[in-house]
Length: 76
Length: 402
Image 1: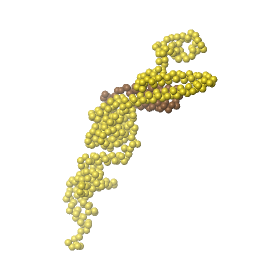
Image 2: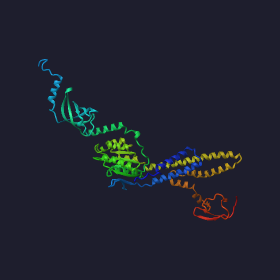
Image 3: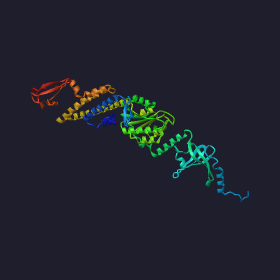
């Protein structure tokens, strides 16, 4: 069975981060809002960095079983 | 011969020519270049001229003969024709009746390629509006190539060098010869059904036009066009342009280049994150400075007015926020640009843990709520004091002030 794609992917995190930074740079925020955003932003940066540092490439191959079903096999 | 006797009519003469020529030149081969090619739409017969540098020959190839052709003849194509010389009496025209046609040399592949390219282009398969966006940060990439080929090794090398976070799923296929195009089509469909990868790379190392031919086949082009997963192609060398390249969402000149385009460089991402962090910090500092100025102004104004409790409370709040801002601004003078860890610490310093480290303690009532006012608990009631290292039990003995 195909795996569902991760909900909180790196791409989403980056998008949210970009959004936060843009909001903060627009300068309209209240101080409290912006401190909350700041901390959220730093959390996102940490999470992104953690994802990037979790460097472990998985290599698999799609194969056809004897019954014709498609499956994956770990190569590395 | 007298002027009026034994004078041929045109018809008679043409019949005579026909009788003399026809069935004299049969089962022969003739080679040359096709021009004025016309495939009659309703009859299905082909009419064209075969020429070389010095001469031309009218040719016809009837539907019953041309329906077996494996390629589509067109102007400029070098061919050799098998058939017989006939005379079209009505026009007094010598013509070659073609029963078989073969392309000469490799020219036919180039032409077949040009023809398919033109027709798919006209159909709109190469239009930019059909190009899908290549995901900038794929989690997993599907590779369609020969698992034992060097193209695959090149791709793996580039991927692990650029960004070892990204997973790879290979569907090994024949990249040339009989059945290769079908395997490529199947692989594209399997990936689409399996729905586990964000991006496909279709690749093959360099080779002759025959070697690369599967990537010029119409069924492959259509499968790529129909794929709902974006596709990057990397076929052959820089100078090779296959139909696959035109119909793919992005064309890379080589398999390695396809891998480069498929994943963002890890270093780039890290420096992007660092830059974003700088922006975040700069903006918060700017905002704090700006609010602090407003606070100063308000304070000046308030100093010659009656002090109002509400304003005082706001000042108090601003003071607290200012303390936090000062910490952040101080950071500016450190080398926080390069150091994530340092920033994390700075952030933590805003949290309760660091406050406790400085010798503060937090009182909790028996239901675990923070005690913010002395009258929240009554005399004799026990509570818990949380310090930086461990908690201790306490009991309220008196009210010092209301």
